[in-house]
Length: 473
Image 1: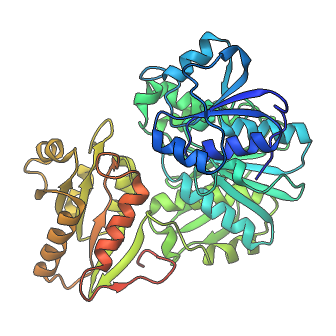
Image 2: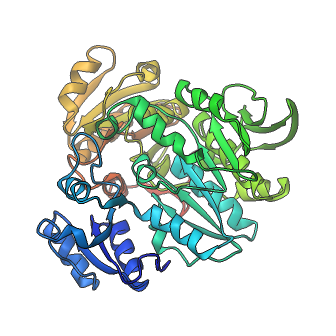
Image 3: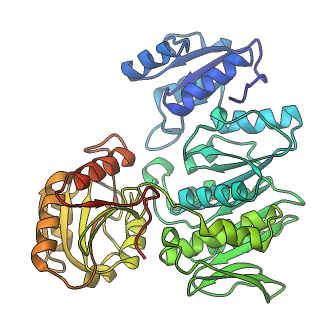
Protein backbone atom coordinates (compact mmCIF):
# COMPACT_ATOMS: atom_id res chain seq x y z
CA UNK A 1 0.00 0.00 0.00
CA UNK A 2 1.04 3.60 -0.64
CA UNK A 3 0.07 5.56 2.49
CA UNK A 4 -1.44 8.94 1.60
CA UNK A 5 -0.52 11.55 4.20
CA UNK A 6 -1.33 14.72 2.24
CA UNK A 7 -4.72 14.87 3.99
CA UNK A 8 -3.50 14.00 7.50
CA UNK A 9 -5.97 15.18 10.15
CA UNK A 10 -8.59 16.22 7.57
CA UNK A 11 -11.95 14.75 6.62
CA UNK A 12 -12.11 13.12 3.19
CA UNK A 13 -15.12 11.61 1.44
CA UNK A 14 -14.66 8.47 -0.67
CA UNK A 15 -17.46 7.40 -2.99
CA UNK A 16 -17.52 4.13 -4.90
CA UNK A 17 -16.30 1.12 -2.94
CA UNK A 18 -14.89 -1.11 -5.62
CA UNK A 19 -11.23 -2.12 -5.71
CA UNK A 20 -9.87 1.40 -6.19
CA UNK A 21 -12.25 2.98 -3.67
CA UNK A 22 -11.38 0.52 -0.91
CA UNK A 23 -7.66 0.99 -1.64
CA UNK A 24 -8.04 4.78 -1.52
CA UNK A 25 -9.95 4.67 1.78
CA UNK A 26 -7.30 2.44 3.38
CA UNK A 27 -4.39 4.51 2.05
CA UNK A 28 -5.93 7.73 3.33
CA UNK A 29 -6.72 6.23 6.74
CA UNK A 30 -3.19 4.86 7.05
CA UNK A 31 -1.89 8.34 6.26
CA UNK A 32 -3.94 9.92 9.03
CA UNK A 33 -7.03 11.21 7.22
CA UNK A 34 -10.55 10.84 8.61
CA UNK A 35 -12.32 8.86 5.90
CA UNK A 36 -16.06 8.76 5.30
CA UNK A 37 -16.86 6.20 2.61
CA UNK A 38 -20.10 5.39 0.82
CA UNK A 39 -21.56 3.52 -2.12
CA UNK A 40 -25.03 3.36 -3.63
CA UNK A 41 -24.96 -0.44 -3.35
CA UNK A 42 -25.50 -1.95 0.13
CA UNK A 43 -23.45 -5.06 -0.63
CA UNK A 44 -20.38 -2.93 -1.36
CA UNK A 45 -20.86 -1.03 1.89
CA UNK A 46 -21.03 -4.34 3.76
CA UNK A 47 -17.79 -5.50 2.15
CA UNK A 48 -16.15 -2.20 3.09
CA UNK A 49 -17.27 -2.59 6.69
CA UNK A 50 -15.77 -6.10 6.71
CA UNK A 51 -12.43 -4.54 5.71
CA UNK A 52 -12.61 -1.94 8.51
CA UNK A 53 -13.38 0.93 6.15
CA UNK A 54 -15.58 3.44 7.96
CA UNK A 55 -18.80 4.07 6.06
CA UNK A 56 -21.23 6.92 6.47
CA UNK A 57 -24.18 8.16 4.43
CA UNK A 58 -22.74 10.99 2.36
CA UNK A 59 -26.20 12.09 1.21
CA UNK A 60 -26.89 13.49 4.70
CA UNK A 61 -23.34 14.53 5.63
CA UNK A 62 -22.18 18.07 6.35
CA UNK A 63 -20.12 18.73 3.24
CA UNK A 64 -18.44 21.79 4.65
CA UNK A 65 -16.19 19.44 6.63
CA UNK A 66 -14.65 17.64 3.64
CA UNK A 67 -11.31 18.57 2.12
CA UNK A 68 -11.90 16.43 -0.97
CA UNK A 69 -14.14 13.83 -2.59
CA UNK A 70 -12.29 10.79 -3.92
CA UNK A 71 -14.55 9.56 -6.69
CA UNK A 72 -14.48 6.11 -8.25
CA UNK A 73 -13.75 6.37 -12.00
CA UNK A 74 -16.92 4.39 -12.67
CA UNK A 75 -19.16 7.19 -11.33
CA UNK A 76 -20.47 9.73 -13.91
CA UNK A 77 -18.64 13.04 -13.48
CA UNK A 78 -20.23 15.05 -16.31
CA UNK A 79 -22.21 12.84 -18.70
CA UNK A 80 -24.90 11.74 -19.23
CA UNK A 81 -25.62 13.71 -16.03
CA UNK A 82 -23.42 14.21 -12.97
CA UNK A 83 -24.05 11.69 -10.21
CA UNK A 84 -25.76 13.07 -7.10
CA UNK A 85 -22.51 12.82 -5.13
CA UNK A 86 -20.78 15.00 -7.73
CA UNK A 87 -23.49 17.62 -7.38
CA UNK A 88 -23.16 17.54 -3.59
CA UNK A 89 -19.43 18.17 -3.80
CA UNK A 90 -19.75 20.90 -6.42
CA UNK A 91 -22.44 22.73 -4.44
CA UNK A 92 -20.10 22.79 -1.42
CA UNK A 93 -16.98 23.73 -3.35
CA UNK A 94 -15.27 20.42 -2.54
CA UNK A 95 -12.65 19.31 -5.08
CA UNK A 96 -13.36 16.05 -6.88
CA UNK A 97 -10.38 13.83 -7.65
CA UNK A 98 -9.53 10.16 -8.10
CA UNK A 99 -7.18 7.66 -6.53
CA UNK A 100 -4.63 8.29 -9.29
CA UNK A 101 -4.54 11.97 -8.32
CA UNK A 102 -3.68 10.92 -4.77
CA UNK A 103 -0.87 8.80 -6.22
CA UNK A 104 0.70 11.69 -8.15
CA UNK A 105 0.27 14.22 -5.34
CA UNK A 106 1.87 11.83 -2.84
CA UNK A 107 4.82 11.19 -5.14
CA UNK A 108 5.34 14.95 -5.42
CA UNK A 109 4.97 15.47 -1.68
CA UNK A 110 7.57 12.80 -0.92
CA UNK A 111 9.97 14.11 -3.54
CA UNK A 112 10.32 10.56 -4.81
CA UNK A 113 12.53 9.80 -7.79
CA UNK A 114 10.33 6.84 -8.73
CA UNK A 115 9.54 6.77 -12.44
CA UNK A 116 5.97 6.51 -13.74
CA UNK A 117 4.93 5.16 -17.14
CA UNK A 118 1.30 5.61 -18.20
CA UNK A 119 -0.48 3.78 -21.02
CA UNK A 120 -3.85 4.84 -22.38
CA UNK A 121 -5.91 4.54 -25.55
CA UNK A 122 -9.20 3.05 -26.65
CA UNK A 123 -7.79 -0.39 -27.43
CA UNK A 124 -4.61 -2.28 -26.67
CA UNK A 125 -3.71 -0.50 -23.45
CA UNK A 126 -3.88 -3.60 -21.25
CA UNK A 127 -1.61 -5.61 -23.55
CA UNK A 128 0.80 -2.68 -23.88
CA UNK A 129 0.85 -2.09 -20.12
CA UNK A 130 1.46 -5.77 -19.40
CA UNK A 131 4.14 -6.03 -22.07
CA UNK A 132 5.91 -2.86 -20.89
CA UNK A 133 5.93 -4.08 -17.29
CA UNK A 134 7.09 -7.54 -18.40
CA UNK A 135 10.02 -6.17 -20.42
CA UNK A 136 11.15 -3.99 -17.53
CA UNK A 137 10.72 -6.78 -15.00
CA UNK A 138 12.62 -9.30 -17.12
CA UNK A 139 15.51 -6.84 -17.36
CA UNK A 140 15.79 -6.76 -13.57
CA UNK A 141 14.05 -3.45 -12.87
CA UNK A 142 11.90 -2.90 -9.78
CA UNK A 143 8.46 -2.77 -11.41
CA UNK A 144 5.05 -2.01 -9.96
CA UNK A 145 2.11 -2.62 -12.35
CA UNK A 146 -1.47 -1.52 -11.82
CA UNK A 147 -4.17 1.08 -12.36
CA UNK A 148 -6.91 -0.04 -14.71
CA UNK A 149 -5.22 -3.44 -14.90
CA UNK A 150 -4.54 -5.72 -11.94
CA UNK A 151 -3.98 -3.85 -8.68
CA UNK A 152 -5.34 -0.41 -7.81
CA UNK A 153 -2.60 2.23 -7.89
CA UNK A 154 -2.72 2.77 -4.13
CA UNK A 155 -2.40 -0.98 -3.52
CA UNK A 156 1.07 -0.91 -5.08
CA UNK A 157 4.24 -0.85 -3.01
CA UNK A 158 5.29 2.48 -1.41
CA UNK A 159 7.42 4.82 -3.49
CA UNK A 160 11.06 3.84 -3.88
CA UNK A 161 13.62 5.78 -5.87
CA UNK A 162 14.54 2.75 -7.98
CA UNK A 163 10.93 1.77 -8.75
CA UNK A 164 9.16 2.12 -12.09
CA UNK A 165 5.36 2.28 -11.84
CA UNK A 166 3.63 1.11 -15.02
CA UNK A 167 0.01 2.25 -14.98
CA UNK A 168 -2.86 1.64 -17.35
CA UNK A 169 -5.26 4.58 -17.13
CA UNK A 170 -8.73 4.91 -18.61
CA UNK A 171 -10.22 8.20 -19.76
CA UNK A 172 -12.29 8.22 -16.54
CA UNK A 173 -9.14 8.03 -14.42
CA UNK A 174 -7.35 10.72 -16.43
CA UNK A 175 -10.37 12.99 -16.03
CA UNK A 176 -9.95 12.75 -12.25
CA UNK A 177 -6.16 13.31 -12.25
CA UNK A 178 -5.32 17.01 -12.78
CA UNK A 179 -1.73 16.52 -11.52
CA UNK A 180 -1.01 13.70 -13.96
CA UNK A 181 2.70 13.86 -14.80
CA UNK A 182 4.27 10.63 -16.05
CA UNK A 183 7.91 10.32 -17.04
CA UNK A 184 6.81 8.45 -20.14
CA UNK A 185 3.36 7.91 -21.56
CA UNK A 186 1.75 6.22 -24.54
CA UNK A 187 -1.53 7.14 -26.22
CA UNK A 188 -2.14 4.25 -28.58
CA UNK A 189 -5.30 5.07 -30.51
CA UNK A 190 -8.66 6.79 -30.26
CA UNK A 191 -11.91 5.41 -31.64
CA UNK A 192 -15.47 6.16 -30.46
CA UNK A 193 -15.95 4.67 -26.99
CA UNK A 194 -17.53 5.78 -23.70
CA UNK A 195 -19.21 8.66 -25.53
CA UNK A 196 -22.14 8.37 -23.14
CA UNK A 197 -19.72 9.43 -20.39
CA UNK A 198 -17.81 12.13 -22.30
CA UNK A 199 -20.47 13.65 -24.53
CA UNK A 200 -18.53 13.61 -27.81
CA UNK A 201 -15.51 12.10 -29.53
CA UNK A 202 -13.80 15.50 -29.29
CA UNK A 203 -14.18 15.57 -25.49
CA UNK A 204 -13.02 11.98 -25.23
CA UNK A 205 -9.91 12.69 -27.32
CA UNK A 206 -9.12 15.86 -25.36
CA UNK A 207 -9.19 13.93 -22.07
CA UNK A 208 -6.91 11.24 -23.45
CA UNK A 209 -4.45 13.90 -24.67
CA UNK A 210 -4.07 15.25 -21.12
CA UNK A 211 -1.65 12.41 -20.48
CA UNK A 212 1.03 14.56 -22.14
CA UNK A 213 -0.06 17.95 -20.74
CA UNK A 214 2.41 18.30 -17.85
CA UNK A 215 5.40 16.60 -19.44
CA UNK A 216 8.74 18.40 -19.43
CA UNK A 217 12.33 18.02 -20.47
CA UNK A 218 13.56 14.45 -20.10
CA UNK A 219 10.08 12.93 -20.46
CA UNK A 220 8.89 10.86 -23.42
CA UNK A 221 5.55 11.01 -25.24
CA UNK A 222 4.70 7.94 -27.32
CA UNK A 223 1.80 8.57 -29.69
CA UNK A 224 0.05 6.32 -32.19
CA UNK A 225 -0.56 7.82 -35.63
CA UNK A 226 -2.77 5.18 -37.24
CA UNK A 227 -6.11 6.94 -36.66
CA UNK A 228 -7.27 10.52 -37.35
CA UNK A 229 -7.69 11.60 -33.73
CA UNK A 230 -4.23 10.53 -32.54
CA UNK A 231 -2.64 11.98 -35.69
CA UNK A 232 -4.12 15.37 -34.79
CA UNK A 233 -2.77 15.08 -31.26
CA UNK A 234 0.65 14.00 -32.56
CA UNK A 235 0.85 17.13 -34.70
CA UNK A 236 0.28 19.27 -31.59
CA UNK A 237 3.09 17.71 -29.52
CA UNK A 238 6.12 19.99 -29.63
CA UNK A 239 8.08 19.16 -26.48
CA UNK A 240 10.36 20.08 -24.66
CA UNK A 241 9.89 16.34 -24.09
CA UNK A 242 10.82 13.67 -26.65
CA UNK A 243 8.05 12.62 -29.03
CA UNK A 244 8.06 9.09 -30.45
CA UNK A 245 5.42 8.21 -33.03
CA UNK A 246 4.32 4.59 -33.45
CA UNK A 247 2.61 2.95 -36.38
CA UNK A 248 1.70 -0.47 -37.69
CA UNK A 249 0.82 0.99 -41.10
CA UNK A 250 3.72 3.14 -42.30
CA UNK A 251 7.14 4.52 -41.46
CA UNK A 252 7.43 7.38 -38.98
CA UNK A 253 10.00 10.20 -38.85
CA UNK A 254 10.89 9.55 -35.19
CA UNK A 255 9.79 6.57 -33.16
CA UNK A 256 8.93 2.94 -33.92
CA UNK A 257 6.98 1.37 -36.74
CA UNK A 258 5.99 -2.24 -37.36
CA UNK A 259 5.97 -4.10 -40.64
CA UNK A 260 5.65 -7.85 -41.26
CA UNK A 261 6.17 -8.64 -37.55
CA UNK A 262 9.36 -6.56 -37.39
CA UNK A 263 9.81 -3.48 -35.21
CA UNK A 264 11.98 -0.71 -36.62
CA UNK A 265 13.34 2.12 -34.48
CA UNK A 266 13.63 5.40 -36.37
CA UNK A 267 15.65 8.46 -35.36
CA UNK A 268 16.23 11.59 -37.43
CA UNK A 269 14.43 9.91 -40.35
CA UNK A 270 16.98 7.07 -40.33
CA UNK A 271 16.33 3.43 -39.56
CA UNK A 272 18.23 2.18 -36.54
CA UNK A 273 17.76 -0.92 -34.41
CA UNK A 274 15.18 -3.54 -35.30
CA UNK A 275 13.69 -6.54 -33.53
CA UNK A 276 11.49 -9.39 -34.71
CA UNK A 277 8.23 -10.41 -33.05
CA UNK A 278 7.61 -13.17 -35.58
CA UNK A 279 6.34 -16.32 -33.89
CA UNK A 280 5.44 -14.65 -30.59
CA UNK A 281 1.90 -15.99 -30.32
CA UNK A 282 0.84 -13.50 -27.63
CA UNK A 283 1.61 -10.69 -30.08
CA UNK A 284 -0.19 -12.12 -33.10
CA UNK A 285 -1.96 -9.64 -35.40
CA UNK A 286 -1.27 -6.14 -36.70
CA UNK A 287 -2.97 -4.59 -33.66
CA UNK A 288 -0.43 -6.30 -31.43
CA UNK A 289 2.40 -5.02 -33.59
CA UNK A 290 1.32 -1.53 -32.64
CA UNK A 291 1.13 -2.51 -28.98
CA UNK A 292 4.63 -3.97 -29.18
CA UNK A 293 5.93 -0.85 -30.92
CA UNK A 294 4.57 1.30 -28.09
CA UNK A 295 6.03 -0.92 -25.38
CA UNK A 296 9.37 -0.93 -27.21
CA UNK A 297 9.43 2.89 -27.32
CA UNK A 298 8.48 3.16 -23.64
CA UNK A 299 11.10 0.77 -22.32
CA UNK A 300 13.82 2.19 -24.54
CA UNK A 301 13.04 5.57 -22.95
CA UNK A 302 13.91 3.96 -19.63
CA UNK A 303 17.27 2.70 -20.81
CA UNK A 304 16.64 -0.91 -21.82
CA UNK A 305 19.08 -2.31 -24.35
CA UNK A 306 18.03 -3.95 -27.58
CA UNK A 307 19.13 -7.32 -26.21
CA UNK A 308 17.03 -6.87 -23.06
CA UNK A 309 14.00 -6.05 -25.21
CA UNK A 310 14.51 -9.07 -27.46
CA UNK A 311 14.85 -11.46 -24.54
CA UNK A 312 11.78 -10.04 -22.78
CA UNK A 313 9.58 -10.22 -25.88
CA UNK A 314 10.24 -13.93 -26.25
CA UNK A 315 8.88 -14.70 -22.79
CA UNK A 316 5.74 -12.53 -22.86
CA UNK A 317 2.76 -14.76 -21.96
CA UNK A 318 -0.03 -12.43 -23.10
CA UNK A 319 -3.23 -11.47 -21.29
CA UNK A 320 -6.22 -13.38 -20.04
CA UNK A 321 -9.41 -12.57 -22.00
CA UNK A 322 -7.49 -11.09 -24.96
CA UNK A 323 -6.91 -13.56 -27.80
CA UNK A 324 -6.50 -16.23 -25.11
CA UNK A 325 -6.37 -19.79 -26.38
CA UNK A 326 -8.54 -21.81 -24.00
CA UNK A 327 -8.42 -25.25 -25.55
CA UNK A 328 -8.36 -27.41 -28.67
CA UNK A 329 -10.61 -30.10 -30.07
CA UNK A 330 -8.71 -31.60 -32.97
CA UNK A 331 -8.14 -28.71 -35.40
CA UNK A 332 -10.84 -26.61 -33.71
CA UNK A 333 -9.53 -23.88 -31.41
CA UNK A 334 -11.48 -22.04 -28.72
CA UNK A 335 -10.33 -18.45 -28.18
CA UNK A 336 -11.48 -16.13 -25.41
CA UNK A 337 -11.41 -12.48 -26.50
CA UNK A 338 -13.96 -11.26 -23.95
CA UNK A 339 -11.97 -8.05 -23.46
CA UNK A 340 -13.08 -6.95 -26.94
CA UNK A 341 -15.88 -4.72 -25.68
CA UNK A 342 -16.29 -2.63 -28.84
CA UNK A 343 -16.28 -3.20 -32.58
CA UNK A 344 -12.76 -1.88 -33.11
CA UNK A 345 -11.32 -4.32 -30.57
CA UNK A 346 -13.28 -7.24 -32.02
CA UNK A 347 -12.03 -6.31 -35.47
CA UNK A 348 -8.45 -6.88 -34.32
CA UNK A 349 -9.26 -10.50 -33.44
CA UNK A 350 -11.27 -11.10 -36.60
CA UNK A 351 -8.42 -9.74 -38.71
CA UNK A 352 -5.93 -12.13 -37.12
CA UNK A 353 -7.95 -15.36 -37.60
CA UNK A 354 -9.72 -17.41 -40.29
CA UNK A 355 -12.55 -19.97 -40.44
CA UNK A 356 -14.30 -18.27 -37.54
CA UNK A 357 -17.42 -19.27 -35.64
CA UNK A 358 -18.06 -15.93 -33.98
CA UNK A 359 -19.88 -15.44 -30.66
CA UNK A 360 -20.88 -11.77 -30.54
CA UNK A 361 -23.21 -9.58 -28.49
CA UNK A 362 -23.94 -8.17 -25.08
CA UNK A 363 -24.74 -4.54 -24.33
CA UNK A 364 -23.96 -2.70 -27.54
CA UNK A 365 -21.71 0.32 -27.71
CA UNK A 366 -22.39 3.29 -29.99
CA UNK A 367 -21.89 2.24 -33.61
CA UNK A 368 -22.70 -1.41 -32.96
CA UNK A 369 -20.92 -3.57 -35.55
CA UNK A 370 -19.92 -0.69 -37.79
CA UNK A 371 -16.76 -1.37 -39.73
CA UNK A 372 -16.70 -5.14 -39.18
CA UNK A 373 -18.27 -6.07 -42.52
CA UNK A 374 -14.78 -6.18 -44.07
CA UNK A 375 -14.14 -9.36 -42.02
CA UNK A 376 -17.34 -11.23 -42.85
CA UNK A 377 -15.63 -13.37 -45.49
CA UNK A 378 -13.46 -14.83 -42.72
CA UNK A 379 -16.52 -15.80 -40.61
CA UNK A 380 -18.42 -19.03 -41.23
CA UNK A 381 -21.30 -18.10 -38.94
CA UNK A 382 -22.14 -15.71 -36.10
CA UNK A 383 -23.97 -16.55 -32.86
CA UNK A 384 -25.74 -13.59 -31.28
CA UNK A 385 -26.10 -13.20 -27.52
CA UNK A 386 -27.39 -10.69 -24.99
CA UNK A 387 -29.31 -7.43 -25.33
CA UNK A 388 -27.81 -6.66 -28.73
CA UNK A 389 -28.94 -9.90 -30.37
CA UNK A 390 -32.07 -8.57 -32.08
CA UNK A 391 -30.42 -5.36 -33.27
CA UNK A 392 -27.41 -7.29 -34.56
CA UNK A 393 -29.78 -9.73 -36.28
CA UNK A 394 -31.22 -6.80 -38.25
CA UNK A 395 -27.81 -5.27 -38.87
CA UNK A 396 -26.33 -8.49 -40.27
CA UNK A 397 -29.36 -9.28 -42.40
CA UNK A 398 -28.31 -11.51 -45.30
CA UNK A 399 -24.70 -10.30 -45.23
CA UNK A 400 -23.51 -12.97 -42.79
CA UNK A 401 -25.04 -16.29 -41.80
CA UNK A 402 -26.07 -16.05 -38.16
CA UNK A 403 -28.46 -17.23 -35.47
CA UNK A 404 -29.79 -15.72 -32.27
CA UNK A 405 -28.41 -17.94 -29.51
CA UNK A 406 -29.37 -15.74 -26.56
CA UNK A 407 -26.90 -17.00 -23.98
CA UNK A 408 -23.16 -17.59 -24.09
CA UNK A 409 -23.56 -21.24 -23.18
CA UNK A 410 -26.04 -21.88 -26.01
CA UNK A 411 -23.88 -19.98 -28.49
CA UNK A 412 -20.84 -22.08 -27.59
CA UNK A 413 -22.86 -25.29 -27.94
CA UNK A 414 -24.20 -24.31 -31.36
CA UNK A 415 -20.86 -23.00 -32.64
CA UNK A 416 -19.04 -26.15 -31.55
CA UNK A 417 -21.61 -28.43 -33.18
CA UNK A 418 -21.50 -26.44 -36.44
CA UNK A 419 -17.71 -26.40 -36.53
CA UNK A 420 -17.47 -30.16 -35.95
CA UNK A 421 -20.14 -30.85 -38.58
CA UNK A 422 -18.28 -28.74 -41.14
CA UNK A 423 -15.22 -31.02 -40.79
CA UNK A 424 -12.94 -28.32 -42.17
CA UNK A 425 -9.49 -29.79 -42.96
CA UNK A 426 -7.91 -26.49 -41.94
CA UNK A 427 -7.75 -24.88 -38.52
CA UNK A 428 -11.09 -23.41 -37.37
CA UNK A 429 -11.86 -21.16 -34.42
CA UNK A 430 -14.78 -20.72 -32.05
CA UNK A 431 -14.16 -17.12 -31.08
CA UNK A 432 -15.77 -15.18 -28.26
CA UNK A 433 -15.11 -11.57 -29.31
CA UNK A 434 -18.33 -9.83 -28.28
CA UNK A 435 -17.82 -6.25 -29.58
CA UNK A 436 -20.06 -5.27 -26.64
CA UNK A 437 -19.98 -4.52 -22.96
CA UNK A 438 -20.86 -7.44 -20.67
CA UNK A 439 -23.16 -5.76 -18.17
CA UNK A 440 -26.41 -7.19 -19.54
CA UNK A 441 -25.49 -10.74 -18.52
CA UNK A 442 -22.24 -10.54 -16.52
CA UNK A 443 -20.65 -8.27 -13.91
CA UNK A 444 -17.69 -7.51 -16.19
CA UNK A 445 -15.78 -8.84 -19.18
CA UNK A 446 -13.63 -11.02 -16.88
CA UNK A 447 -16.70 -12.88 -15.61
CA UNK A 448 -17.90 -13.33 -19.17
CA UNK A 449 -14.52 -14.70 -20.19
CA UNK A 450 -14.39 -17.03 -17.20
CA UNK A 451 -17.85 -18.38 -18.06
CA UNK A 452 -16.63 -19.10 -21.60
CA UNK A 453 -13.49 -20.82 -20.32
CA UNK A 454 -15.47 -22.99 -17.90
CA UNK A 455 -17.94 -23.97 -20.60
CA UNK A 456 -15.19 -24.80 -23.13
CA UNK A 457 -13.26 -26.95 -20.66
CA UNK A 458 -16.46 -28.85 -19.86
CA UNK A 459 -16.72 -30.04 -23.50
CA UNK A 460 -15.76 -33.69 -23.90
CA UNK A 461 -12.25 -34.29 -25.29
CA UNK A 462 -11.20 -30.63 -25.29
CA UNK A 463 -7.49 -30.36 -24.55
CA UNK A 464 -6.77 -27.32 -22.32
CA UNK A 465 -4.25 -24.79 -23.55
CA UNK A 466 -0.91 -24.50 -21.80
CA UNK A 467 -0.76 -22.51 -18.57
CA UNK A 468 0.27 -19.33 -20.41
CA UNK A 469 -2.94 -19.38 -22.44
CA UNK A 470 -1.03 -18.54 -25.62
CA UNK A 471 -2.97 -17.71 -28.77
CA UNK A 472 -2.31 -20.04 -31.69
CA UNK A 473 0.57 -19.68 -34.12
